[in-house]
Image 1: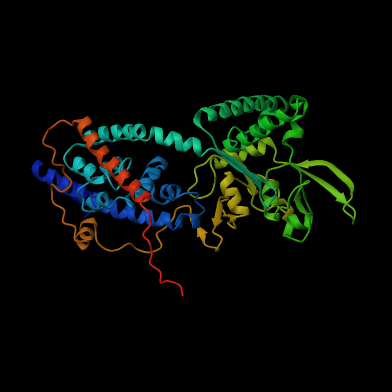
Image 2 (image 1 turned 30 degrees about the vertical axis):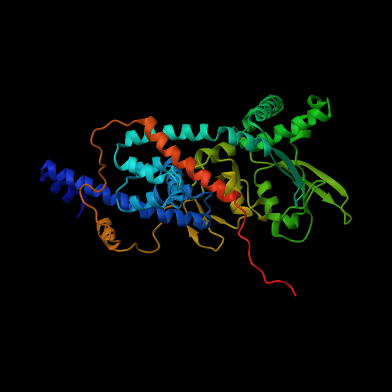
Length: 460
């Protein structure tokens, strides 16, 4: 039955029959969405989205299913939460709870409290449920505040180590009041560094979309420098932001054995050097057989500002299928070390994540006859910008599939039993919190009980 037939049939139905159809179909849709979210949860657990060069399951849903990013993120969150909430899942799967109700419930529900929450959801309105959830979230935060504060303070630490590639890797955890000091200091240093860089760099070459994490890392290093020396402002911008990578021409062009390393630092794989060289200034050096420099070219190769603007205007966003991030770097389809030219027809705009995918991740990229970018997965499979379904879904509509799963949905299955009563928010919240506290006490007592003694035969 096509849309026109449905519209014509709906126009002939009395209002009472339309109400029955709407409420019945709502139940079928809820049951079907529960199964759909189960598939999403399993797909996310297996990280099937990674094979398509996506950074998350939400990105894959946005690309393949046409779901907005925020909505996709919320659906993935709900899908993950349902795995720990069997009662809510059961009611949802039978069309007795709507997605809106489940989305609200999964924000606060726990195995110990889901029974009471489902009872309220089945006997109240969605607006009342939302009010209860907001109250529950406040009570949970207040109930756990002291316990969490003490645990948080005891868990503070700072650790660091040198990784195999020479990078300094670390992590830390501090109390919120101490975190405010650190954040304030980093913001102040970052502001000074940004002003200094603005004064020495060409405004046309600055990018506003530099990763926040990278800017914070720069600010952190600058803060450490200011502790150790008083000449921070006397250093030139070039001394702070210049990164030197030494790589042999043969290695850059074709993975030949040779030098490829950060100056006075660890080695790099040639593909990483090629990624860095895609959008950077290069200086050519001629060495003797012993590696001593004989000559240095004064010419540098970088992407001109006008050409960079042309790429940004043409591509607008990262050209990787399904990605809507801003362009952060320019990629040479045919690397210049392999004969590629720095011209518009050989350049594509990509985000940092997919630039790394193309180089270190093994993804391929080429140009179609119309000049558009075409990507392939590491296994050689093409990534179609307009993805097609590889296999056909199971036959039958939503109603038929629900019947196949022994789900009997009637006109009032999804309709709540609300009879017009108001919500006693205090009473409802207290009842749910009692269940939660009782469950926590039982878990605590179980943890404190001594382990059962295991009988062992006496030794000879």
